[in-house]
Length: 282
Length: 260
Image (cartoon, rainbow over all chains, first blue to last red; front, side):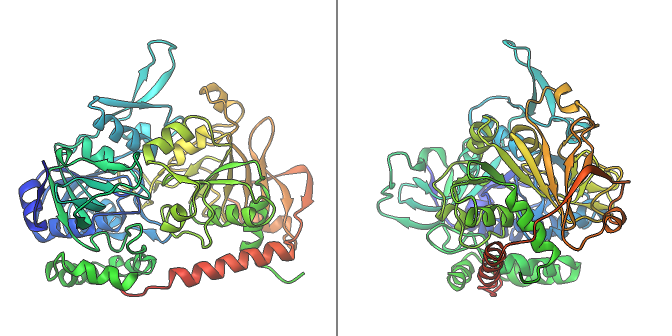
């Protein structure tokens, strides 16, 4: 059964230095509050996994929390570069970053294989693409029935997966709606999982028998953090702050303005601040 | 007809490539603008799909990201990302993929990964995202990007997604049954692969643009097809539709200036 707890406890109990950590959410429901808590607690040497690193991993990388990253698209969507990610790859600042780069299709398949307790995923992918030359984890497998050669990538099995969802009930059953990304697969493929939610309610009342629900017994910790996905968004609660995504370009471009932002908005802040940010955006 | 910018001409020419029957996998940025102009003008029943899992979406403002709430709110339905890539894309359900890119070569291979060597890049670009499998699994691919020497290069540092590879029947030799890039729409002209060599050649030139301008802005000695037509100028409806959606989008994205 999931433990309903505080964000500080959930992170300190479940995220260890050196862990492989997936924080998922495809544009929607990115677990910012939890990621900031990871930075605040000074976790280090993490191997980060995420399809679209987004601003959250730009912050973790720039803060020096990551030794490596597995990803498939490392930009600020619609805006341009992730400057901290670029600085790490191009100039090894603040430390070198080992990268394992895939395509979205491969990452999505690899998460699904992890959830299905399989050792690898296969796809009709990477045909003619140069990633196969630079990533030794992209290999080939031959179909035993037809002889077709397919791409193979290892399943994603994080030590801990962290996601943000809409709501949970008091037993810790979690509901996700809207753009679902790979959160369900990322949680089911992980050894431990932390889910932050907009609210904890008495009755979950899933809107359809086919709703996406993660049962309490498949989750390690559930934490109520209203606004916890800001500046990404939570369907039905608050919109994406596209203005912040645009503003981040300037903040992150320069090491000093970035460090000042981290100090002011993460080190001197707490999860309770997110409700205020999200309210302003709504 | 009022004046129009080269970028407006590019977006509108790109929108015309799409039909009502298309099921289109939409890249963010210029492709997204073109696809939605098509939907709001000549192709009202086009199915637009974004890789965030939103199927049959009809956004009122253009999304900044591939997964803005607007896309989910206006979609016929939304699936998980693994389902999107496995059942719908790999399943062969998408007629057309619409991509942009940082760099392209004469065989319409795209690079969005690195400038310089992969291990020590001069510029680290975002990477491929969905593009490698969009390029191989969609029925055909349209590409839209401004014509410039920086973008249209003689040799790519890195092939993020394969177009026609080394040209000729390279796709077929790798077992691909899809057509690959069939049209590249720029701000100066429209290019299509030569039927045999698959090298991109100019087939249509936008109003007011000279052949010299096109040659000067391309990083390889660009060829012109035997018959080159003039691209029809934007209609009033096309221009109004594009300007309206751009204005709505700008307003929406600047809506909330408060930073976290």
